[in-house]
Image (tube, rainbow, N blue to C red; front, top):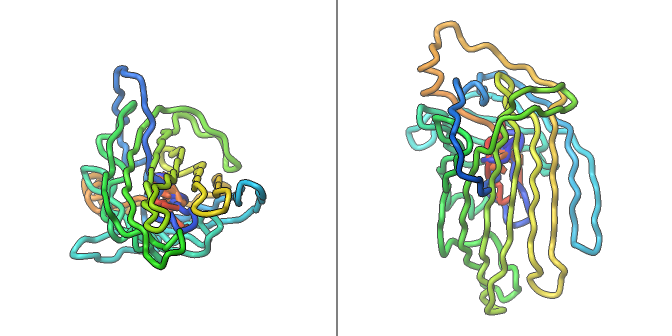
Length: 310
């Protein structure tokens, strides 16, 4: 999630030291009849050699000085690797969320898509992976909690007392609806919109108080294409005398090349062995979380963690 959901372009996720690798999150939805999305794995293609090019923009900075930057990110499925006995797909992003190159690892099976981390990763992310960023069957509206962990080691000493902070992290993903979305690559009807939210409660050991940071991601996935757009917003409160930090990352698809599945592969084999990208970075759901994720393969800094990316 890019992609939010586990990224954001694959699913990219990035936000200073609140970096995870995929955007993650939760959005409430009114009770209504759910609709199952047929052939959901087609929304997250991961054939080796497939390539996505995204146009991106970052608006970020301390609240008193906001800057805007343009960037480009190319996400490619470059192969497979084995992590702890599990075969995963490797998504390489050249610049998710404008944070430099990264690799993200995903596994797709009949139950959904699981995020296995990124390189470079963060100490916080390593305490959370692996975790699910998409559940199959894919239906809307629906929501699930990715994780709710307490007392994890944060990535930094943010209050300057030479003690690394502890943090509580909670993240959820919501499949919201299907709708049309227009990006530079074209207009896609019935794209699946997925929203994710991650909240970090950072316990400041020196200041003896709790600071709350958030990472939210919205990502759109088109059938046969993957991640076509994601928007990830990260907010950090003041830790000492600063005024806090805000960042909004957007990536939109400009060009895509999806490689055909090998002739010997059946749909059931694909569902067992495939994987998703980032944004939810990115990133994005992200890569987005979403996946940054929501990853957005993801990038770095998000908690990005997140949504899937492609």
